[in-house]
Length: 93
Image 1 (cartoon, rainbow, N blue to C red):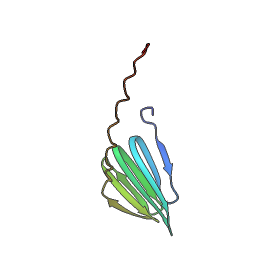
Image 2: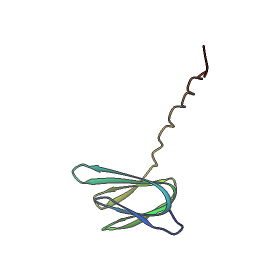
Image 3: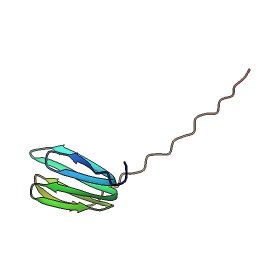
Image 4: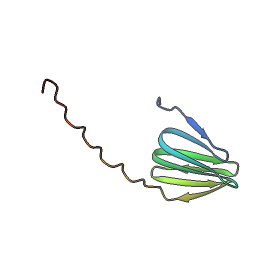
């Protein structure tokens, strides 16, 4: 992303504007839209009809309908280490 470029992620109940950011947006459609916006690095703006909130690095906001609530950042476990492939010998046996 070039410096200063702004991108938007649109969900049914929130628009997230980001600049130079690592962000995760999860959307669930239950009785009303539920969207979780988490920022790993940088900042993002979560904007609904009722207002806007800045989400900084290592923060999340949960948007239910038009209501925004700060929630803990989800920490996902690291993937298991990859095993090295077996060595292959090229040549005659």
